[in-house]
Length: 226
Image 1 (cartoon, one colour):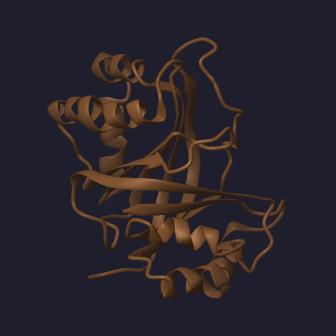
Image 2 (cartoon, one colour; image 1 turned 120 degrees about the vertical axis):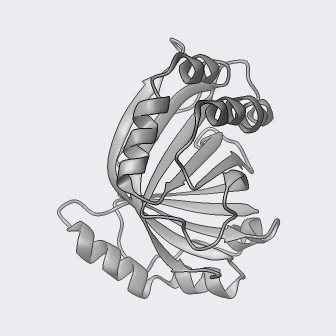
């Protein structure tokens, strides 16, 4: 599965409600994705950036991206279709934005339910820059293997857990995007409190994470299979 992620920052002074409504109701990119065979579309509305941290001094290899994105418009495609969707031309949102970035990932559900209609109302998104000396492929493999196994062993509260590695790693790209869905905000909060600060999680992150930006969001499904 391929995920096309469009990170958005609304114009200064424009309210979130009006911006999001205009985007959902009139964005040509949404219709284009639907016509191109996207499995599902969603708009993740950022509640707040929870944390930014480095796990090794001097570990940042890429230039930093904004941490104050207002939303992530995402589409899921079968392999090859997502890249073709991006290559077909510029992304036309139909609304003015202060900043926008388009990322393409190869995605895999590593725990929980398969992709489809979102499992719940709360979501965690982590944008990960790999540790020095670790290749993009190694970072993705470590996350999907070692890290997910540790998380499961600690006990999990999420409904679905997806691991996405960059299709075309570059200086302005994140190596890994991690997404976790929860059926309630309370379960998300409990999971973060239980897992993020543990020695097991922090110790294993040091093996493959250089920088990590984490967001909490609510997810609006634009369409998808029942």
